[in-house]
Image (cartoon, rainbow, N blue to C red; front, side, top):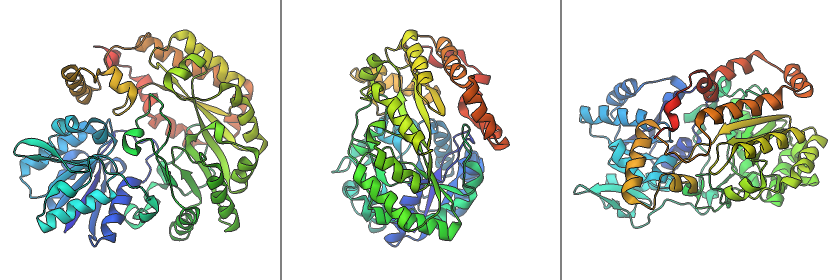
Length: 474
């Protein structure tokens, strides 16, 4: 049985990293005897649907698995139209956060016949076995499929893996991290390594932030890999591919303080001599002096800190539960061990007013962050905010709203500020923070041409340059 795994083209060439989820699918399949697997990374190779269609027609796989993130759905839809027009025998199955967040509505829009809700490592194997044995699909965890023109779900409505230590490493030979080394540069702080790659040490997050959609896959349950398992993967990446920098891509790398210490102690003991960063952000309340010391000794030089807002009122609204009074102390603790930090903030959150964002600006300037990232809030499927904004309580309205969202990114009118005002205050946020002597000096001191090139690839930079007024219009 031949299987093709597809990552869509997102249209952005900013920080393209190896598709770990597809790597995990491949290794799980190979562990179960399905060794004939091909990968198409249309983002890396800048492929349009027509090119991928021609490739698949030539390869003629039995199964085509497509990863779908919000923002890639129209690329995937176009590919599925082409595949169906060819009348190929391949069974096409889609999965990913977009599918888990929208379920049948996403499959209807894409024109897909099979979809997986949740984690897919076990489900893709069961799906392949069901096709091979011509058995019932009811036993494929999380599977949605068409039967007699109607959607049917498997007995277990969600794919979920309790013990993630049972999953093999991603199929790094298939992913080939060497192809991505030149696409992982950072805008704000240059990498220390020349051969970076991401890994995951855990899955999930127990928190209930209203803007976040990670809970739709993790069910707000965090699961951990064993420290030895993690360090073994790092050693393998270093020995096989020369990796010298790790991106820990967890949602909550340091949530379990003791486990995190065990990881860093083992990295020190094994003398890995690599550097690492945590670009997805860590919670400040997990940081202690002893932990940060071990982070530094094991090679950490940069972390993101998820703050989101400097307003106590908005903090309560988004259920982030960060104690703003402790941020200064924790950032100083990082500086004590020469670990740089970037504060993550958002503009345009639900019920947020201009005065709330101005509070965030003043807050960020008082904290000794080395960098900040300021994003405009976008509601993502599966999050509490998305369900409220798109009126999930009203089935008819929700279906119509989601259709328009998938077609063109439609967002119902929910903000107290116009999009123009949000962009203005976002610019003010960045200018007020960065155009200060100390920050400018530090930026210029470490500046590389590669950062400028990466900046021009950044999707937010492009949005600023080509402003579309109707993004948030009704």
